[in-house]
Structure formats: C-alpha cells, structure tokens
Image 1 (cartoon, helix red, strand yellow):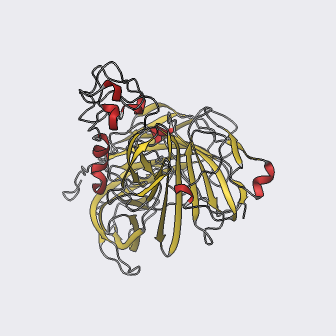
Image 2: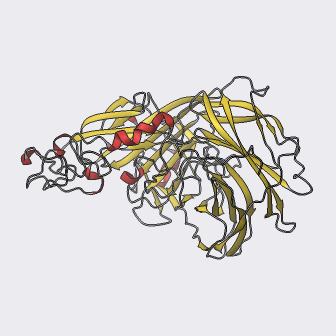
Image 3: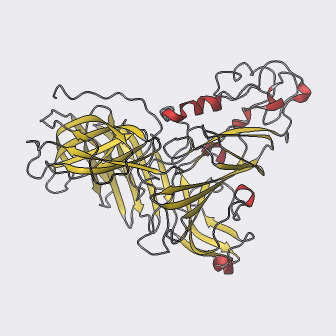
Amino acid sequence: MSARRTTIRIERRWRRSVEFTTVASLLGLAACAKLIGIEDVQLDPSFAGNPGTAGVDSAVAGQSASGGHTNSAGGATAGRGNGGQNTGDGGQSTGNGGQNTGSGGTGTQGGAGNQGGNSAAAGATGASTSVKGHVIDFWGHALSNVSVEVAGKASSTDAQGAFSFDSVPNEYDASLVVIFNVNGRIKTRAWVYQGLTRRDPTLQIYEGLGERGTQVDVLPNNPTTLTGSRTLSISFGGPDGASQKTDVSGAGISAAHLAWQGPQVTQEFAHALIWEPDPNSDFPAQFIAFDTTQVGLTDTSDIIQAHGSASFNLSADTIPSGTIAGTVPGSGFTARFNNVFLRYTSNAVIKLLADKSKTAGFSYLIPGIPDSTATLVAGEGDVYTELGVTHKDGLVPNTSGLSLSIPTPARDLAVTPNTDLTKVSASTQFSFKPGGSANAPFVATFAYGDNSVHDDILFVVSAKAPFKLPKVVNGAYTLPPGGPYIWRIETHGAPASVDAMAGPSGFLDTLSNSYNADEPSGPRTGDGFYTLSKPTELKLAP
C-alpha cells in the first residue's frame, strides 16, 4: 500500500440520503417508485447523530428534571426508590409524575422519578404530562420550522428540531407537515404517528430539506492495474449523503455530480476499488487495488464546471479476502435476488455483485478493507409490484452458516365500503392482511399519482387496523382531492410498538431510501427487513 493511503477512522454520525424516490405513478406504470422502509428499531448505539443534531439524543434522554427516563444520566437510577413503576417508555416521567418515592405513584407515566415529593402527586393513570420531542430526517438532520401537532395542540419546531407541549394525555397522536423545494418542485410530506405514549418522541421522516450539489473530477489516473475485464467502482460518502460510480474507466469522470442534503459545505470520503470478475458469474474473484481520499464539497449553482477533484493511487495491493456463505430458505420464488455491498463507515457503498439465481445456497467472495464490512441483501419481488427484502450487515470474510428469511408483504388491501375506492372520505375504512404478526406496527402511504401535478404524500405510522384517514395538524393540511392516489402498506423490521418507532434514532430501514429498496444507505446499521405491498389505486372525494 502506498504511503498516501491511510486508514480512515471517522465517527459514526447521522447521515443523509442521496435521493428520495416516492411511489408517484399509477398502478402498473413503470414510473412507480418506492416509498419508505424500516428495519428493526432497536436503538443502535452506533447511530450517534449529525454534527448539527448531536445534542438531540442527550437532550431527550436528559429531560428528567422530574425524573424517570431509563436512559438518562440524571434522574433514572436516583428515582428507583419506592416510587411509581416504570412501564416501558412510561418511565419517562415529567410534571408531577416524577416527584414521588412514597407508597403511592403506580401510574404508567410517573413515580420512578427523583427522591422526595408528595405521593398524592404521583402520576396516576390518565394524568396529563408534557411531551418534548424532535423531528429528524432520514440522515438525522434536525428539521426546524416544521408544523407539529400533538393531541390537538399545534406548534412549530425550533432551530434544533425540537417541540414541546404541556398537558398531553397518556396516549396521543402526533402529526406534522413539511413543505420544501427540490429543483424547483414543491414537495409536501405529511406524517401521522398514532397511539404514542412516550414523553420524548423522535418523529423521523424521509426528507424535509432542499438538495445540495456540486461537481468534482474523478481521477483514477489511468492505473496500470485496471486491465482486461477488471472493474473499477468509486463511491462517495459522508454525514449528509452518498453516491456511487460504477464501471469507471481509467480516465475517470469529468465533472461528476455529487448530491447531498443539509449544510452548504460538507466533507466526504471517496473510495475506489478494482477487482477481477469471475468469467462465468461476473462476481468478484480477486481484489486488486483500493484507495481512499477525502474531498470537501461546497454547494454551487454551477452544474457544468468541476469544483474540486478526487484523485486516487490505485497501484497493486495485497487485499485479504474470504467468502460469506449460507442459505436463503424457500422455493417457488418469482423474482429472487441477492445483492452484496461493501459498506464503509463513511456511509459510502460499493456494489460488489447482483445474483438473480433462485438457488437457496450461496457463497460470495468479499474483501477485507479497513473501515468497511459487507452487507448481504436478499429479496423477492420489486418496488413496482410487491417486495419483501431482508439484510445482514457487518459481514467479514470467512463467515459461514448465514440464513436469511425473506419477509412477506401485506396483502388484500381493501376499503369499506368498496365503492369508496373512487370517493374516499373521512369515514372510509382501510384494511389489509398482514404479512407478519397481527397488530404489528405498519406504515400506510398515500401518494398522489402524478407528482408533476401534486407532489404530496401522506404517511400514517400506526398499529391500529382497520383505520381511517387521520387529520393532519388539526386539519390545517389535507391531501388534494381527486387523484388518483397510490395506497400501499409497508413494514419495517419488527418494532414492538409505535413508541419504539419514535425512539431517539428513528426507525427508517437502511434499504428504504434507495431507489429499488435493495441497497443500503444512510446512518442505520445492523440487520433488518422491509416489505412493500402491491399498489392499490383510489381517489379522494371532491
């Protein structure tokens, strides 16, 4: 390895997506894109936050002046005296609920707080308490000036994406609306979280910021190692976005466009990898050279000229490698696929292979490159029809015995009465057959069919089915009448509740923000899965 090449050690931070695509076409049209996704929503300690929102998690955890957040540094252990009982997220006591350590206080929201206080003031069931939360996007950026409603009360987020409401009942709904401009198009995204009880919700949404971009020259410098059938892929990644350039020539790319969201100025790492493909499968058979360099990016309105460069030294390296092997049980698959990616701690991703065979067993060669691991994605279907996809993250060479089960998407989407398909109203009921556990949380999405007319999408995060279209910010926002709309059901891992989906790191799955829901992106790491139902077309009443 050349002296120029250094091992990168960067902090895991919140990241942003390069692109967000929506289900915005009519049923059966190839323009149909995908909406959102989720993976297992266990709180991931590696998901630490963007520089602009680093204080979000600690601030939420530290809202324990009246005691009780189980993860907070103050008030959690000190409050474990003789006071009220924590019940899951209910231990995040606020108001009077955290004042008791006496024999009273068996309320769901309080009683596990700081020492002292009056037992009669402990958080009795049904007592109202304050709610202090945040709004973040896919990459963890705090979103300011977002209209938020909690239990019928409306406000806006501050510069840190925070909101606060007093006298909120034990169970409540929260909704929000973001309106923003991307390349001259006005986008409106409405979100509703139903059945929350936690006092510190983080409401994660896909997007809410305009797109940044610039051009850089990509310079592999005509390496002598790039010969014959060898492949060169180059990927960029940072806290605000990522992009990938495949099958790059030795001459490189002039003024390659890189996009991100968030700050005007950002830093990314550029990673290059050359490998020799197997002549039969086209999968990697040997890894030849790699390099990494850092680039600074500044948003510019100039879309022609390069404003910087990424230069690589791709002399031959000795790169350790080994296989990952296992099975994907099942038979009779219609459109099976396995994808393997090299995923860097910088958030950059390089696609190593796409295997469309339907055999259960697999064995793939992956490299051992500093600050990277492999992610295996296995799925069936596609985003135009229906999709079930799962992924295993953090894989290293010589890993065997892997087993992945492809999840089943929701099916049999219906409205009651059926005649409401052409005139959905506030009284229309929506139902479906879950692909997994009954009563598990889901996300219902309603996207206007032609986003050149209305680029509007409503997301309903809920565990309540059947359901009706909810009000958004007390009715201040409504979906445009008519349509058509595309209605779908998504599931995102196996969260225990909507409360779990509103944890400090959000819930959106690493696959959910890629165009075909088959490639990892963004800040979340760890295993997970995502499903997307078949699209159902409907229209709203005038």
